[in-house]
Length: 140
Length: 136
Image (cartoon, rainbow over all chains, first blue to last red; front, top):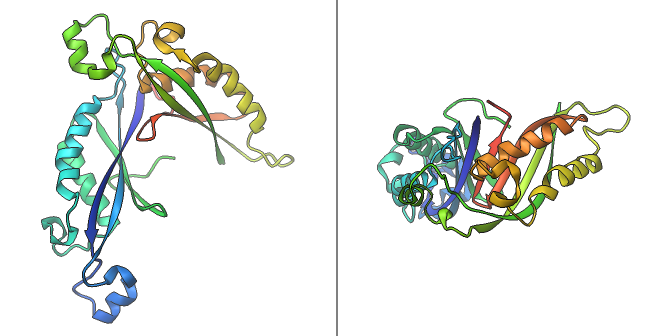
């Protein structure tokens, strides 16, 4: 039987939303306070949803220890307490939470093979959240 | 089509152990969840049903009725229980959150005449939950 498992993680990082091909006025108008020159930070909540057949021997889709180890090493260690604008992934890419979602989904899909990566969901603050399923339609 | 979700809470204990595996293997796969006397969680159950809005009542489902069914079929069976010992479905099946979601679907599906069951979501903690949509 197929089920979906979601695990929630946290990391903190800073960013500045700024597009080099826009004028200073345009950047200000599009990004508002998020364009302030020295950046600002968030506590991001990351939800990773994986899916698969529930193994009859273990009762699990995949072992949480494996998921936690992968997310810790490849995502939380990579982005936690960093200035996202300084990272290789965001050279020429504005580190919005949309783009962060796409990047984190890519890391999971390429590297995590113990279950199918279904989607991710990120909360930038308590008032906004973003979901990405590799371009597939999201399920309610 | 409108989707409606009702929550309920229950507290229960469990342990993860597969008798076909050696003690070492059980320990390696399940870690602390294999501790012999079990441990507990405050679970949250979310039941989502779907259906058309009734013209007269304005409801997809009578929430009072849904609440009663959830209490009778699920909460009574699992609340303040040791799942491995007291719930027949988990005598030979490990009471992981995955299996709990699948089992609850099996209990509710035949009892819900009023609206179509869409999803069972079981939170084991605020940072871990499982969804089951009845897929085989």
